Length: 417
View 1 (tube, rainbow, N blue to C red):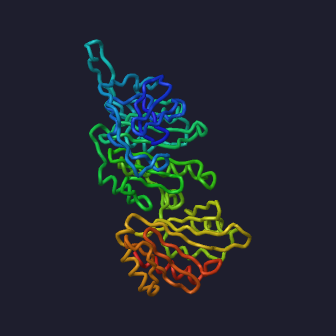
View 2 (cartoon, rainbow, N blue to C red):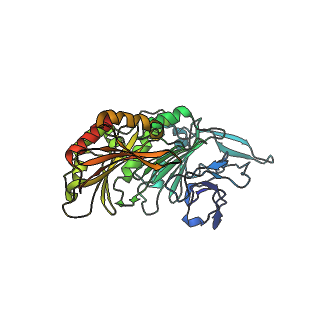
View 3 (cartoon, helix red, strand yellow):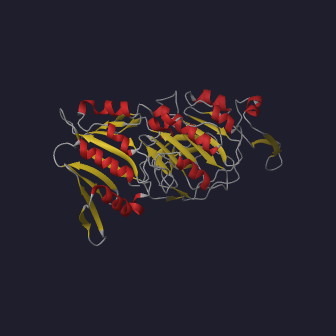
């Protein structure tokens, strides 16, 4: 069977009945009952990736690829993939069978040459238990997972997993590539173009509890986090459904996709920066989150030390805008932080030059002489717009951001791309 390392997320080929498993990538030892099942039966052509980049939702450092230690298994024959699945149902899902001699000349065994089609995946509803989804896709269900062979020249099988505490809806899916396949740049570009901010250089993307990873070996995985740092993720089920439609539509060329509203609300599709002027910075902390959500479906609010409202933006150099309110009675918007895209570093100087034309000359503050790093501070009527090496921020001179500064900064940024 294939289990998921709890520390780095790597797929591990584990013998049935093993009580403890040591990850061959990060070395973490885990108890079997605490590990997620990716596939109840090891696929015939399964070969561990030579390197593994931990997805961002796992404790392991996602910026440091891990090397596989140990010899991959070979010569595995998958038996019983169709246990409990009628032949007629299997054929309806696009499954094709063949008989061949077993090693040693004794008898014949059944092998899987096909599986669920893209059309079947497009029709599938994720909002059901493992047993019901396995029946719909002619797959094989375990307690918290489903294994589905695929009729695809790119992907060999699909694994869908549930949290034991959430049996009515899965929390992740994984499309395993066929042996010898690697990531396709056209597919990568198509996925990236439909995700706010796009995939990063390592193939990762995330937005407020929903994650996608397109690995260089060709695997695609999607997952959601039901609990966020600021509290429960109220959208996690709908987020995974929207991500599922996006991946199936793009990777299997199917006429399914999240709607524009779903992309805005659930997947961090961006709003034009200038439209954020609809949020009045004088709105008090009591009403800020509700007011932002009313105007922008994709607004995400959380409270740690301050109330933070994050909105994804449609801008070449910026990923999102986070507005903050102090946790005190009558507090107004006190600061704004804008995170950047991967394109920002290479176009920062041009961005600063454009802002000069909109806001006037900035003050230059040397931050690191030897590395030639500096911050640029653009004076506004009652505050400053800061542009440093990796972020943009708006800060007031007093306790809250003035409406005129807010409007002027947003409009200038919207024009500078």
